[in-house]
Image 1 (tube, helix red, strand yellow):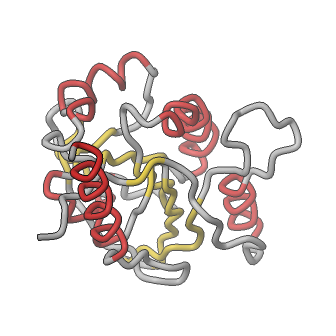
Image 2 (cartoon, rainbow, N blue to C red; image 1 turned 180 degrees about the vertical axis):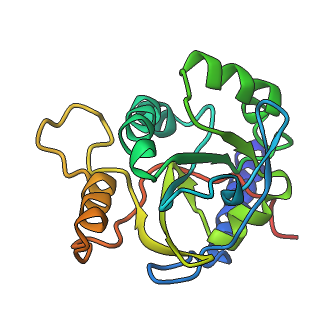
Length: 202
């Protein structure tokens, strides 16, 4: 009976995720204003000089997200000065994933030395607008006038274990192409991570 109940719960979660449409490269990026771990609201409008953003949906407890924490810090350190800061959003509701509570987000950001905003998406409105499916899930955004456009989506690189010296750095390569005024060679990859925790479909 317990196994059947667990299977039903997992199946409902998969159905909820299946109904989400992930925005593709070339699509307009939805705006947002979400609460940061310091209590302040953060929006792309807070960055008038930015050329774009490395937007990542990530979480506290997912092993894949944890494996990429230091790489996110490195991306922010390397590219924020070039106009592409990292903005992280936690999509998981505390009611489903207690380890992803706002208070634990504050602890995580301090322990992992996050140099970028770590925002809580209460109600998953922004998560669902973008169609983020896993943590981590990257959406590289580029400014076009007053609008933002998705120019790359998927994984940070092809090294989930963090031990491949020959890994392909998708995000870094994409920004390098933008800086040179060239077309991005790889505009989409499969994001690998833990499924975003969504309420079961009723």
